[in-house]
Length: 163
Image 1 (cartoon, helix red, strand yellow):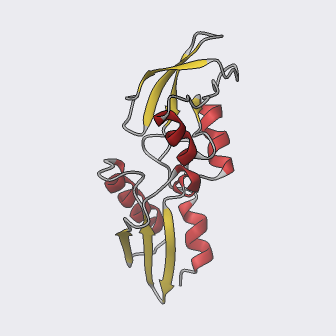
Image 2 (cartoon, one colour):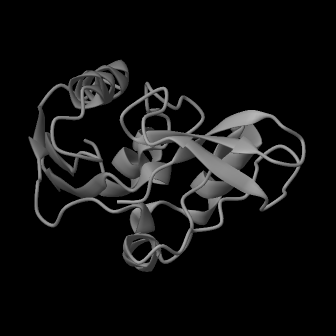
């Protein structure tokens, strides 16, 4: 019989298909796990409305649990409250940077408000760690990332957008 603790352990082994170094727990999209006998219910929140990775993530969750003999699984998409990058773990942020993607700047909501008033948010280059960077495009390799370039090492990099 599955336990809630074991389900959480297994979910650590399910990765985001768009950023494969992050588990879905690193992302903070798992909002709850309930176990009632053989029935397991998992609530997940998309990183943004219409995220194309959610179906793949749900399938990967089912496959991981099935590999452990857990067959009665319900996965619910929980839209409220809306996901925020503040839900990402510190370990997830470190993994992003090691992978070459700048992690969201802390205080994401404040960063967006400051941008409205012409104040840029300093995005640190994940390669050389310089804060001398500039936005190239709000649209990166996926909808949840923006393209930046470092003014010191001149390397382009993705920035995981704040939500």
